[in-house]
Image (cartoon, rainbow, N blue to C red; front, side, top):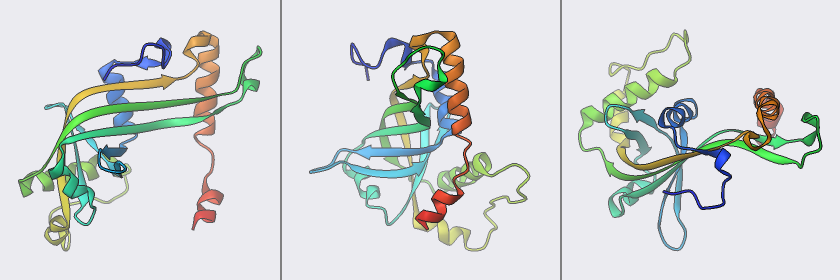
Length: 202
């Protein structure tokens, strides 16, 4: 998976694996894409990184038609979106054009369903451990009511990473002072209260 010659700018291209892994760990909800006709099949699903084998692990509701696609074709594309926002030129001391800053990681992989229920159980427990808020008081265990009924309702899968790259667009082409302004602005707007927006959706 190569970057095109002129896009994105070299300053925005990211290949350092540890940096890419940090994005996946902080923003695990991936958009996964399988090539089908006449349109690609797309699902949103949290993935976790298995560092020991350089794989991504996830699971679907068994009713998701994407489950069948895992058998029909083993090529898959995963997109992890980090923070993003419109960048107003007013944050800079000199005249700039408006832009959109963002962090994203792209993964090409080979996917296959999990065959072993023990592996699926381990995946569920690990996903909960990694994402449960600290001190929430909740721990997922196999002893939870209907756990082994629930596990029959999902399909686990693993993705062998073929290639991985990131696009981190944070004003790196404008110099360090501008990077700091862009970084701080993106961090600030990413913390805004979404209550009114969510209320509108519901």
